[in-house]
Figure 1 (cartoon, rainbow, N blue to C red):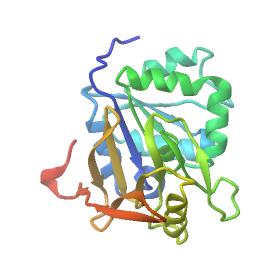
Figure 2: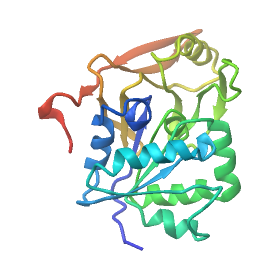
Figure 3: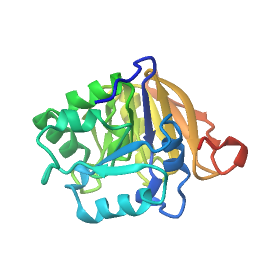
Figure 4: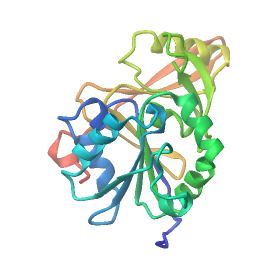
Amino acid sequence: MSIRSTSDTHIIAIGGGGFSMEPENPLLDQYILGLSPQPQPKICFLPTASGDSDRYIVRFYSAFLKFSCQPCHLSLFNPPTLELRSFLLEQDIIYVGGGNTKNLVALWRDWGIDQILKEAWEQGIILCGLSAGSMCWFEEGLSDYTGNGVYKSLKCLGFLKGSHCPHYDGERDRRPVYHQMIASGELADGYAADDGVGLHFVNGTLANIVSSRSTAKAYRLEREGDRAKETLLEPTYLGDRGNRNF
């Protein structure tokens, strides 16, 4: 097992995008790979939220085998080893896919993966993901885990303070419901991200906002009295050659 510096921790929370949603646009995935100091970083995909979908796993390999990295995955239906802690702590990057956030959190807690991921994060292993894999790192978030189009608040892992709403521009009702829940106090102040936006937290603080789409935005939502105040956070578009981090 490699020894890592614990000086900085990294989480990249993607509102939607990456190989899952825009396979012809690798900008966010390349940004994540570029954060590792390793010339061929080990990147592990966790498809838990999708029920370890075989098709999703194939899409991950189809995308990342094109890059200078060493991709692998962890399926809880067919784990590559019983030594899950050692397996995950050997990675440079852990990438969490989308799907059902409530199922993801429950399974991770049952398997003890939540604690392993916290240890990985504290050791400097880069954590990232989109949708469910974006929301899971926060204290709570706005989720449609029931699958019937109804959004509910959901407690998550709590590595990052506050709440999170992915797909802010991608699903019509997310914005008004997130505003409502912030205003009522059902959800804590937090961050919303359009599809194509990555929120990059360093040591638990938002340090950079990047996007794979020139029009995509991020927002800070805060409760003010009986309303929610929305503040625009302008991302750096990764399509501008001079801004690429890979």
